[in-house]
Amino acid sequence: MPEQMGIQLAAAVARKDEAALLVLLDPEVDFRGMTPERFEQAHGPAALLEILLREWLTPADEITGIKSIDSDAVAELRRVGYRLYVVNHGRSFVVEHVAYFRVRGQRIAWLQIMSSGMLPRQV
Image 1 (cartoon, rainbow, N blue to C red):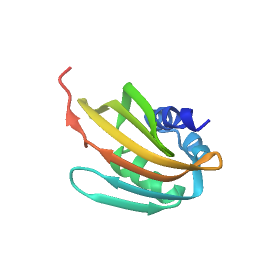
Image 2 (image 1 turned 60 degrees about the vertical axis):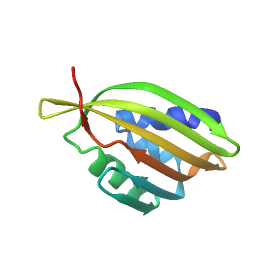
Image 3 (image 1 turned 180 degrees about the vertical axis):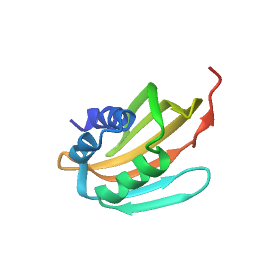
Image 4 (image 1 turned 60 degrees about the horizontal axis):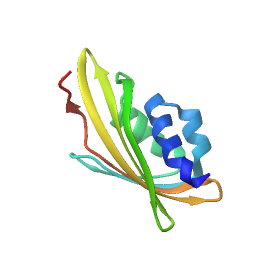
């Protein structure tokens, strides 16, 4: 199952699917994130989802596609990279996330995501 968790994580983020993310995340998940503007840190799923689905991807962001999911492992550390296509108020953007995570039991217990930030997309 850990080998599929990165793909599941990327797909759940692309759908903004909080329920699916809660299934994947350990109740004590430790999160660190980085965007071009700031560093983020959170403990627990609620705080992580606040950052990921309300700050990085806002409610106004409509995700219209996901591209190039790439998942792999480095020893016990898992990695997934993915690119999202986003429309917000008629403007098109692309954002790429690269995530590293560790699994405890069947859930993600440690997660670090680097985000490219929203970049204008040439359609």
